[in-house]
Every structure is written in C-alpha cells, then in structure tokens.
Image 1 (tube, rainbow, N blue to C red):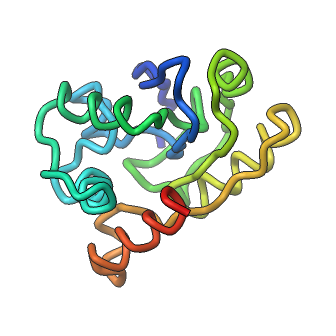
Image 2 (image 1 turned 60 degrees about the vertical axis):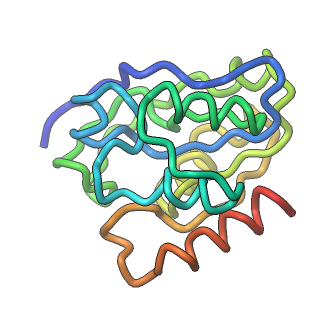
Length: 161
C-alpha cells in the first residue's frame, strides 16, 4: 500500500453540464498523466460509442471529446492509501474540491464510474455539492463480465437520458 496524490487536473470548461468522476487515477494513468490510460480500460471506447464517434486515441482527441460534449472529467479523491489500482484497498481518502469545480461551471449532474467512486462521493462530497450522483458501471477491465456494448448502453442511458 502506498500514499498517492492526484496530480492530473480536471478536464472542464464553464459550459460543462455533466461531471464524470472516477475514484483515483490508476498507476498507468498517473504514469501518462491522463485519465483512463490503461489500454484495457473501456472508458474511451464506451464514450465514443455513446456519441457515435471514432474512439479518441490521443490526449488532445480525448480532451476535445469531453469538452465538445459539455462534459467534465475528474476524480473524487485528491489523495489516498491504495494498493496498485485496487479501489477496494483504498484507505484514508481525502476528497478533491469538487464543490468549487461545480460552482465555476454549468454542471448540474454528477456521474461516478463505479460503486467505489459513488460511495466515496456520497460520503465525502455529496452534502457539500448538493448534487446526488448516479452510478455508472466501472469501465475497468476488472469489470469484464460487462461487454463493451452493455457498458456503452449504460453510459448512453445516463448521458443522453
């Protein structure tokens, strides 16, 4: 177990309407300094399917997709003790200042990618933001029981109504 700190800034604009929150960047994401960077993570392919777009490959393409769709992307935690990428191992969580991010935008909805992100958001942030989060299935390869098509369908229900 190691103490890790979130060093990736949020992807957000004043026009962002929906905030998507993960738990904490994985070791691969911290290494590349960008969200959902593990090659087997299905976040970006699922998002592309939702919007009928080609899956973004570069950081610039991924950032453009988030901003073009009036989304924002960040994580619940600023720091925690964690083993590898195991959300189940998280101890001593400290939240990011999600409330300030929301106050500076048009965000009115919060989606959390996975049950741990949602649980931590509800425990650490929901009272201060005043926005209840919706839980999306985890895009992690560890959630292999859910196919990419089913994952994208769940994301589409949440993102497109």
